[in-house]
Image 1 (cartoon, helix red, strand yellow):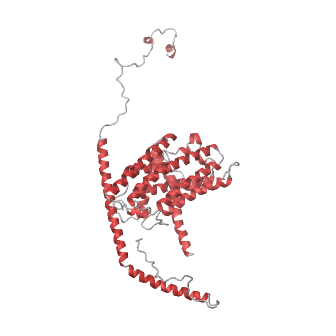
Image 2 (image 1 turned 90 degrees about the vertical axis):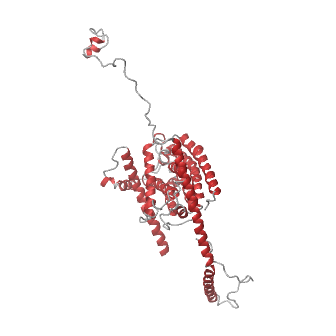
Image 3 (image 1 turned 180 degrees about the vertical axis):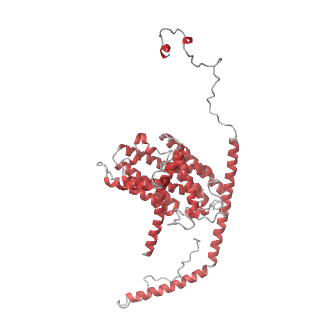
Length: 326
Length: 140
């Protein structure tokens, strides 16, 4: 009994800060984009608009959930729940410090990949069950994009896995004690970041929610809490991808200067690195125009895929040739 | 004055008839406008950036290799240590096993006391007893 209670408390301790983080991520995005575009951003609710996410959340919660009369209701309602759930359960393998992890799987990377692949189902279920051509086309685009970039994402990761010799997140971070993998794999690191942008359907790859053509993509027909669940799932995935990126390439919880900065807690360093990438996400969104769909597919299949595959050969050749394998 | 500007209005035969002359180009025309983008051609060259990047990356590869060598050594050391204390670990495991088996037999005798000619601890398989080898050599 006490064991189950302990586990539940651990899960709550992970999920509640995560949801708060998502809420304030939305505010941070609006503030940062406001600054980049020389506006103030939200500044009415609370001091500096700090209560804006709470007001937004409250609004979404008290509104009526509009259910389209021609929708397939079961699937329509299951889709946001699935998206939200998948965004949360991938966090169970993310280590915030040495041993600070819900479940230290020895195939953590595979697990994370499998769960993020399942995220496609939430999108396609939402698009199909809405019985709306906009939602359906948006879902098809979104799915094709996510599937395409998952391939390059996986191939990029193989190089880091060759370096670490393990699929366990803790061991991957430990193996970066000498040097962060972003140093030898800098081009791959950039490619990984761009693939993360595409994987989370963020600008400049936010085709699925092309406002002008598809109104808002796969979630046109959703309102109130169902929409909020999609929203939370999307932003949760964004933060997850940023954390993933910092674990794989920037040494996770390892401090910036190994011994001089050990007094800071490991979670702080992971948070700082993730925040760095999150800022990058917003910066990119504020700076770049949207890609055309064929350009997006070209980038994924004809640039990233061959390039990352070539890197796998290069890295594995080098590691075997110099006997550097772990 | 606006009436004077209207085309074909009576009274004005030439531009010089206007009360005020419009601005025109200076004699010889305006100088050419430079409309191309002004991109400064300073800083390190592309080759230099590529070279420096390659050097840093090569250092990174070397460092990863060194770290992996160290990790291999630590793993080996841990394995050796575990192998050295293996007899002690095995002895402790044997003690635990014997105690657990005694408890299991007691429980069995208690449960099966109603059954006539039941032999406690007898197995269906006629095999020789082997010490349970549960010691884990692999370092966690």
